[in-house]
Length: 141
Image 1 (spheres, helix red, strand yellow):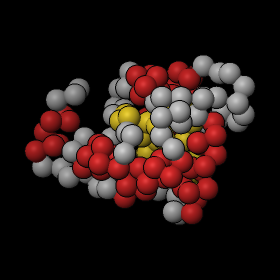
Image 2 (image 1 turned 90 degrees about the horizontal axis):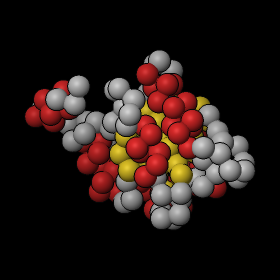
Image 3 (image 1 turned 120 degrees about the horizontal axis):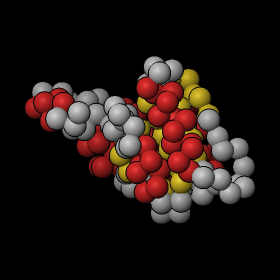
């Protein structure tokens, strides 16, 4: 699967932890930045990730900032994006199973690297349940 990942300066360190995990899990990874801890504006990175998904260049996306809140807000303004801010594995599982989330948002300052890696594994390995959940997602448009 192709996974696009982006962060701002507040999520850069956690992104650097998650990148090798994605590759270890066998995913093709597109890293849109940022590439250091210099201050940047998170909405631009959310836009880059969402555009890759919208254009079909990536299947799923991961966005990381300090809390994950800003990234989730910026991503969810894009049509067709269902970004979920997850802080533990149960919300990660449900965001995929019930909501067919296509972007995972994480907060480096609120989620440690071990928990974040568990969230990423769960999120990527949980299929969408379809059925009644598909009907509800159709109501988003």
